[in-house]
Image 1 (cartoon, one colour):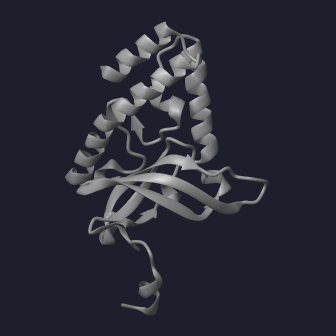
Image 2 (image 1 turned 180 degrees about the vertical axis):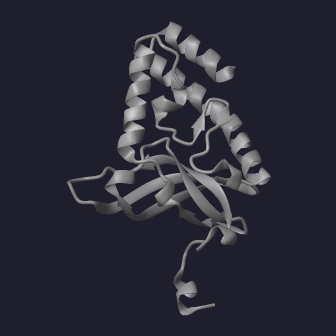
Amino acid sequence: MSLFDRFRSSPATDADGVRGTAQVVTVSVHHGDSVNQTCEMQLVISAPGVAPLASEFSGTVKRKVWPMPGALLPIVVDPANPVDYRILWDQVVLAKDAARAKAEGVAALRRGEPVDVGLLFGEVFLSGANVQVVGDISRLTEDEKSGLRMFAVDHTISRLERLAALRDGGAITEAEFETQKAKVLD
């Protein structure tokens, strides 16, 4: 173990942990024009072989990848110590691209077109009942694929709750709610 290993607070490589996701529950607001700022988030850590865990993150984040609530961030987590994780910032979709996709989803919904409800909530890594992997899917192990499928099932419930909140808040009509609910459950 080198001197720097003693100060490292997260897995250095994929070999030190397993790939998973960190769902952003809350995130601080980016202020001003600076490129880097301290970002504070409440996350739910999920990975194959790791029980979901609430975690708090505070660290420097670039403005271009500043996450939105609901986003799923790729991570490497130590299964023996799930509070020991590293966000793979170089694999996060740019904030402007995620925001554009979300806006396009809302516009399509209002036009009455079929839309992936995942676009409405800034969820970059999961879509519908299927998992969309950003990057090379051949690199995922069977355990990682299984963990993502389990997460997608749990995720369906939260998507239905959010659809109901959109309906109750007047953002979508009852008919739009029923249409999207059918798609989520299909």
